[in-house]
Image (cartoon, rainbow, N blue to C red):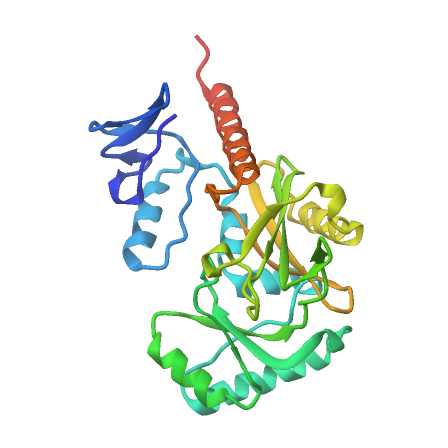
Length: 305
C-alpha cells in the first residue's frame, strides 16, 4: 500500500509518485504507481480538484473504497437532507441572487420549520453554511431579520453555495461529565457496524463543534451514547445499505432530547490531537482497520495463479 496526493494524479488510477511507510520511516518513490482500488480523501471544491478526482476514477476498472452514490449523497448537504429529511434539520438552498431572493429563502425556511413535528427544538436564528463544506468553515449564524447581512456575506463568497437551516438549541442536549456544552456525536461505520464513536464539544460561547473551530474531541464507548440516538443511527445506516463503505453519521441532541442527523461523511478525519494519548491510539486503530480492509479487498481481486 502507498500514499499519494491529489497533485500527483496523472491518469485513471495513476499517480506520478507515492510514499510508503517502512520500519517507522516514510519513503518517497519518484516513479509512477497504479492501483485499481483507492481509498480517497477528496473533498473537492475547486475546478482543478474536481477534475483530478474525475480523472482518477475515469476508468471503470478503478474502484473507490467507498460507494460512489454514498459519496455523492454526503458530499452535498442539501442532497443528504432531501433523502434523509425525516432524521434531519429542515434545510433549503439559499437563493442569493438578490436581497429579495435571500429574504424569500428565509421565508420558505420558516414555513418548512412550521411543518416540523418538533418545531420547538429550533430558535428563530438561522444557520447559513457551505453546502459542500467541511471542518466548520463557512458556517455562520444570523438573526431572523438579518437577510441583508446574509446576502452581503454570500456576495463576498461567490464560489460558495450556501444552504440555510433553523438553529437547533443543543447546548444542553448532551453533556459529558455533567459539563454542558454544544456537542455533536459522531458514529463511525465500517462493514455495516459501528466501529468507533466520539463527541466534539464546542468551546465556550461557540456552537461549532469542529476541532478546526476549537472543539474538543473525546472518544466514548458506544454504551456512553444515548440508546435512542444509536437506534436512529443504525436505522439510517440500514436504509443507506452501504455495508462495504467507511462512513460517519454526525448527530446533535436538542435541549428537548430529540436527536438530529447533521451530516454524513465518507472521508472522516484520520489525524489526532497529539497531546491526548487515547485520541492517538483510537485514530491509529481506525487507520489499521482501513488498511486491513484495503488489503483484504486487494487479495480478493488478485488473479489466481
